[in-house]
Length: 131
Image (tube, rainbow, N blue to C red):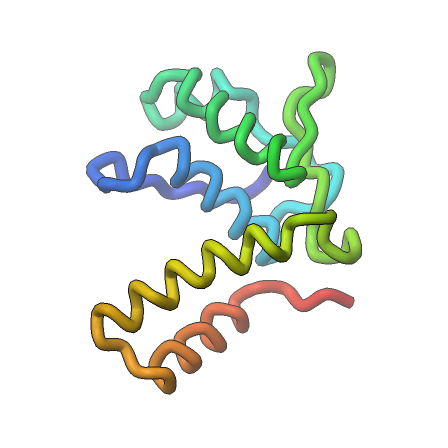
């Protein structure tokens, strides 16, 4: 993967979650595509000075979510990207539940509909459109 991952080791967000999120974002931006290899858990752990089990946890989460596949010989490889086709069964329902919580948080913190919509559109513009 020729993507530069940035982590905030002082963040309240767990490191494994940050790794997972940055890889998903890289795939959505088209910086990593279906079939592209990811760094080994030991390599990524060494690059950030973190425990390889932390990277392993991120990769396992991505595997469970159907984003990557892990093979003993080839290591971790991107399984899905924006060109792969429609989402797998159950994805949309799970995604909608997570989105509901994020929108509820925005509402609780006083963000109005226009602000939320404008920010969502700006973020969507960062990601590669499906062909």
